[in-house]
Amino acid sequence: MGESLSWMAIKGHDRETIYSRLRLVATGAAGDCTRGKIGSRMLAEGWILIVLGQAEHPLLAQSELQKLSAGCEVVDCNVEEHVMFSSSECWKDGQRLWRAEHQGDSDIPGLQAVGELPAAFTAVEQQYRPKQTLSKRRTPKSIASLKLH
Picture (cartoon, one colour):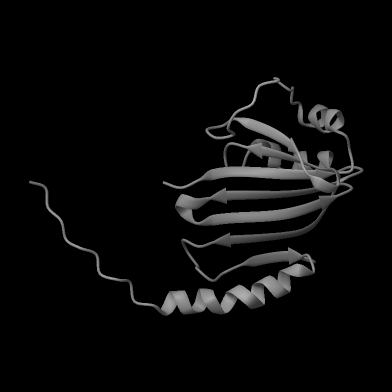
């Protein structure tokens, strides 16, 4: 098993406005954001992080992101490790600006992207794509055989 979670970072509205648009209520408690739980934290430069304890959370539906991003910017991410799936996208003023998606269980190097990805994307891809190709060529190491006694 691996992690299954999603998150969104929002910039351009205060916490109360964001919570209202997402139909969230602060509980006053602190804790982890796994197994379906939701948590929030203020980040630098005015971003608010909302962590959702499952991948593909309903709050990240296209219709929800379209409404939430009116008058602000939203970046979201989904991670479903046990099937090697991840996605990220950016919305602003009700419009999706870009989306990148990777489904490693079917196409290890494959990356589907639409829109104009952030400027830093090309540099990151150029740095890590050769490493991904090299790791794909390596022969897996042997594993020791064991038996129960």
